[in-house]
Every structure is written in C-alpha cells, then in structure tokens.
Image 1 (cartoon, helix red, strand yellow):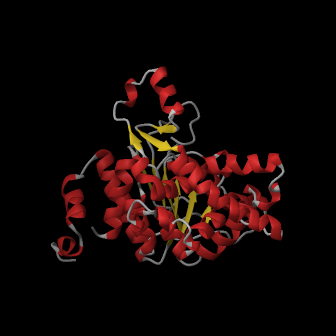
Image 2 (tube, rainbow, N blue to C red):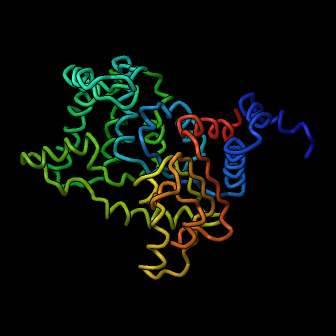
Image 3 (tube, rainbow, N blue to C red):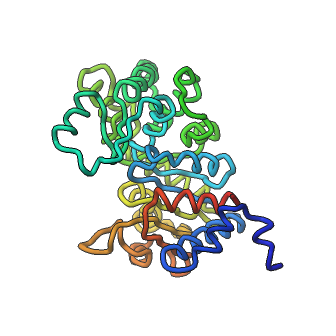
Length: 331
C-alpha cells in the first residue's frame, strides 16, 4: 500500500488520531478502530452496546451516522439510553447544564427536583418537556396494543412512536443526530435488557398497577434473549458478529451471554464465538468487577475464542467512542 494512501482515504480527524495517538490508551483506541474497520471489510457484522447515559451525552451525533452507513447491525442498550435519545430530540432546549455539579449542596439538589429537573452528572433532564411529553404519546401506543391483545418489545413501541410522526412537532435538534430515529428508519434490531428500571419502564409499571394495562402487553427480557438467539444466528454467518461495548453493566453482560447459552445450555454445536471484541471502560479490574475484566477472562466463559481480536480502551467512553466512530466513518 502506498505510504500516503491513508491521507487520501481518511479525513482530518482520522489523520490527527493516527499522527498523535501512538501509545497506551491512545494506541489501543487506534488498534480497536482499525480492528473494527477490518472486521467490516471482511464481511463481518457488528453489535454495539450502550451503557451509562451515552444518549444524554449526545452520542447520537456520531452514532446515528454509523447506523445510517451500515456500520452497526444490532444494538444492546439500557432502557435509559433507549428513551433519553428521544428525550433529547424533543426537549433539548429545556435541558439545564450544571457545570459545577461537583459542588452542589443537598439543598441545591433538592431545588432541582422541586423545579422538575432530574440530574445526570452535569446535565439536567426536564421532567415535563421530556418524560411527560413522551408519556402522553407512548401510552396511546401501549394502550392500542393492549386493547388489541398485541405484544411488542420496548424498542418496537418506541419505533412505532418515532415512525408515526407524532413527535415531529417537538423536534429541537437536527433529527439526523438522533440515533434512535436512525435505528427506527432502518429497523435495526435492539435488545433492551432490564428495561423495567428506566423511566418509561416505571411509567408502564404504574399503568399495570393501576389496572390500565396488562403486564403481558410488554414482551419480557427472557423473550429478548430468545429473539437474540435468532438475530445472532442470522448475523453471525460468514465472518461473524463482532461486539463493541461502550461501558459495562447489563447492556453488555446480557447480549454477550447468548453464545455460551446456545452451545452450553441449548447444546447447539455450530455456534460461532463473537468474532471481534472491544470494550471502552474506565472500570478497574478489582474486587470481582466484571465491567473491568480484561477480554481474556471471557474466554473462560465461552464468549470469546482464543483467536478473537480483543481490545480494551480504559478511558472515558464519551471521549473515546466518537473518535473511534470518526475513524470508522473515515472522517
């Protein structure tokens, strides 16, 4: 390959990364990005998992384009990330940033609550314009399914709401920066383990307790795992399905377990391992922390093969993930 090919094929962000990011976590970032591209170029597919509050960190600015360009084939995320991308879409101007959040007193925190702001680090989500605005529309979709005896997954209800156009009147950011809207338009498979602990999950539970909705109208986590086995077998043919994990927690733990479940518990013998693995995390490998476990530990659990390309970038995902996406997108 000619020496200057990289500069011809890559944009200024990628050129900056290659020139400056040469050692330690910076070098790991480059290696992981190159591995992601190589995996796709060889015909592989990719699962991306989102933990934490990546949607409120506005990861959609880069992640939505990854989805549109076919660099993501399936997503696993927390219920918070599923809903908070849409909240940002419809209520962005009402968000309140608190850069001095480390110095807030308990009284100041209480004042935020009294003013209907829920804080995520330095960003406060407005209850009325975000939570309640979505609630009035998603309830109608839940209720319609409930009355008809239909059942869907949490993300499928969100897709229905987005694609119906009822939220367009509220859009406060460029819709191209909403990863949920991009995913809905491409009907990307999404797994949302533990959805019940999200705001929309709590709201749905409140309707069940009041007798307005049946719990069975929402498909369960076990059904997500069942569906994931089908998606995995479909997407892991050929080069295989890679796993790009942003943060730790259930968003990553749940989907990665589908492989040992299929060949150990179902005793299916033709199940390929995950064919690429990268985790961005600042969790340390101590006191039994799974989120901080190095990738090789996953070999012992039957999740990764000896030869699976493995990367870990021990840094802030809000900084690292957009840079890797920029590389993959050739920016």
